[in-house]
Image (cartoon, rainbow, N blue to C red; front, side, top):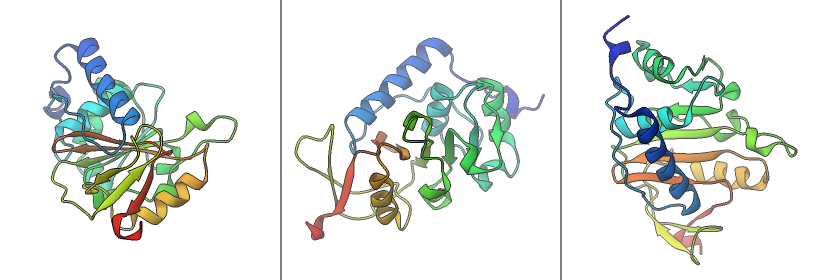
Length: 202
């Protein structure tokens, strides 16, 4: 075993996983706003602490995980995830239940991820983006379930060209990809039912 393999996971696996899982649920039920949570882990770089905590809380032996090239280059992050979750690492993003990007620019396009089926939309992928160093991308407005009227948001953590992809993703409902941003201020959830627009376009 390597040093990376021994990098600790949650100190109290059940309790800590439940704590992060609750934060993810809050983020998905109240989209486009950060939900603070203590990651409690220090995964191998370039996987950030909060993104790593989300993976540990959500992934298991039945959930294939895709990692971007930076995360697979020296295999430390992959070994850490496999050791602590048992999740298989897949080479094709389409086969993943969770796709992990170490920064916004490393995120796959949404149409490269499984959107589930009309009969089983819950089999779609979730994209997790490490947005801890991300800057605002623009003045956006979020609407939809979980948003009281509308909500202004700076879009920090979104990849370039995301809005057209997100509109297409929403048109596939009930199919579609969900997104979790592991930001500096907490987890930001974007369920497929959330609508995003440029503020100037409203």
